[in-house]
Image 1 (cartoon, helix red, strand yellow):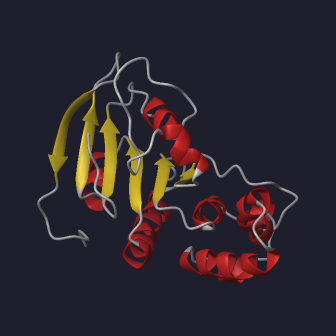
Image 2 (cartoon, rainbow, N blue to C red; image 1 turned 180 degrees about the horizontal axis):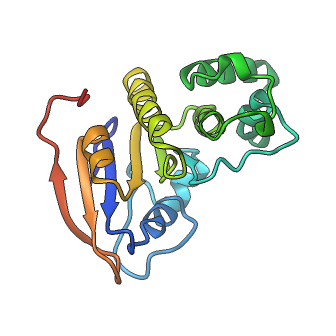
Image 3 (cartoon, helix red, strand yellow; image 1 turned 90 degrees about the vertical axis):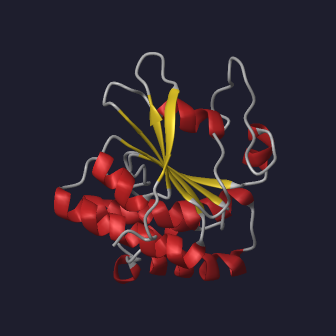
Length: 203
């Protein structure tokens, strides 16, 4: 499987298929038993050290004692980036995430959709070239999920990040993607790759 830089790619499968291992391999959290994996022309470990990707999990995984701003700043703090850069980075990502009015709120004060917006802002705060998303909208109600899909298209349109998005929803795959990777259950393998031959974005 190959994904071009700046493209939007979805991994879609039967609910029994665990797509997460694919993201774990890309993120250098697991090692492949065979074959080769290259991210931006680098081995997974090299891409991780180069901060080539941000990760958005199924649950927001925000620190409850940190505000939206402080959660968004966390990667910059861990990376040791100068504090005078933090403000510029988080203002941009929080603005893109649609949560500017809630920047000083704590996670427990936010809805599920707002928490996931904060999680996306955190993943984008250090300007990675790739965004890995593991069913980030699966726990949201249908109306919020549709809004989040539209907002993700806006983020992609303004940043042109390469996005690898895992979902079990066929409709979500078609709506968001330029390319769909269909996987099989037990063992999880790539069954086919479908190029979405529709004007993008699919509004």
